[in-house]
Image 1 (cartoon, rainbow, N blue to C red):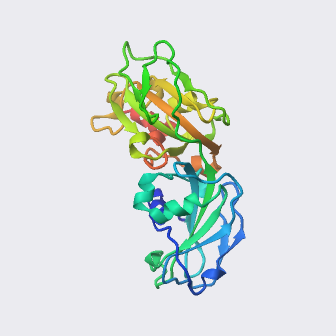
Image 2: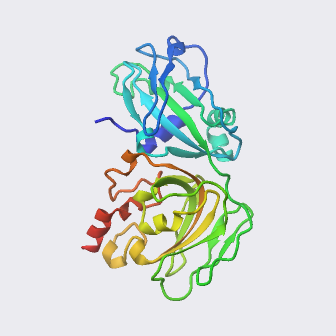
Length: 336
């Protein structure tokens, strides 16, 4: 079975994206097969590959929009052994990839990465290798891994437009001068029906129930209005297949357009469950919930991304606990 790079490994590899010059064998790195839906590209190079300083090489020029400061972008990644060129893993087969925001935080912590992205276009494929990867791929020697990154999509910018007033019965929503929303404390009895309302209407593609969605979001409990999760606070949007999230998310977002801000009121039976069902030490919020979601992008979901969904969510690729909405996990919780 092919080993897949975990999100943490992808983030580590991204943190090493630097520039350099001169390395024996580096010029031999070439794109031998372009990526396709759900399939990583193939690369060829002289082995064993060793570099004594960080190297980058453009394997395919991008032909899409320029990547600018402040943009949100989707990146796909693949990793290859420097000793023999074999594949160590990729993100292509697991969904839409990883989201990165090209912001001042990135510029301060990883200036080379910031410079590389702000000089790229959508569609560009970059190869990278660094002596810091020597021996870390289980090569048994000092060969350096080859990492390949593709800028697959420039996403909608963070939303900061005038919002309409939510529909009657839905909590009020305000936003600060950067467009970050705040959900006011809900009032009245907990909802029994799902409700969603578009606060800012986008004009992008329409989200399908089977899509992978890129979004910023904040969620609060209906009972007390306290936030329990927010991608805005983390500084980067997330991506996740709608087939792997709680049904309230899936039903509330399908049919909406990219570029929209959506408020979703989710009753307990379409959320994570009751306090009794979740148990004493539950890490997911019980009861009815309210979310505000900014839909920044959508892609088709590779079949492999929805296979084998478990109750252990990935915080880097979905809202907390999203995979727990799979029927098996939810049924087992209710059966406690």
